[in-house]
Length: 314
Image (cartoon, rainbow, N blue to C red; front, side, top):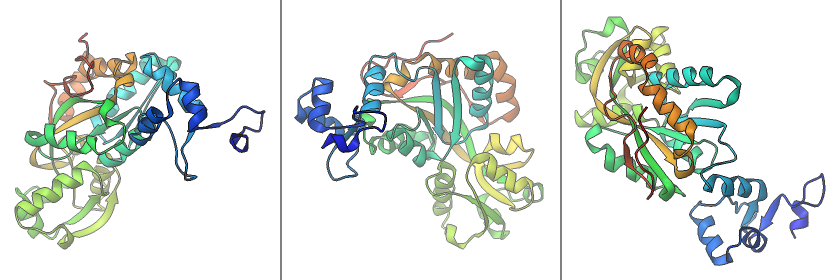
């Protein structure tokens, strides 16, 4: 019975059964089950039957109206990027106490998982060379429940490769670097930089398991920090992360760095303010100093649900 899930403060149920949730949302139960199975509506089956958190249902209803219960906050998860971190810091300072803008770099795959679980509002992703990014990113995103309501929005094309300590600058290609028996700081499974490195190594017939690994880096800047502190000779990462720490860089190619955004978040003013900050005057010298960015497609909708028009320009 739902009474078992009542809050301590009274008789109001914290979780609704499918029948109660269908009545609350004015849906038939069959449609509700379809929405729950695809992750389109917040639900859990941890107890063996569908239960629907009433608080999250209320938020979902408001978000669906393009207003939203959380319009005063924007939590960005997924891949790490120095320029994105700078933009979020600038925007957060501009907003002061009016809204929360936060960044939690977790790597591409975990960022998408958090987005699917509604723990993050936006996921930043990168997964392989820019030439195949449109197809690969769509496939990666499409594997998650609720993704039919998500848009993919380009932030930048980004130079990807290997972050190097100064003594390794004479290694001008990946084969030469591997031959040096370098000490590597590797990224966690599900990180786009790790995927790019492993793919590049396979192309030249080198097994990543044969490399000497001395550390695990959980973000781009963590990887650069390990190299800067001398705990590793090299690490997979973006050119901008190397530049931020004054390190050398071995380029391996260009990748697409994209935002994955649910339809309701796509229409939030905070998301557009983030895009405007990225393209604004204050970020241009930072982007130039970091290097390794092509921002010509910033804000372009690569793929998305019907009705997601390209973001406005300032």
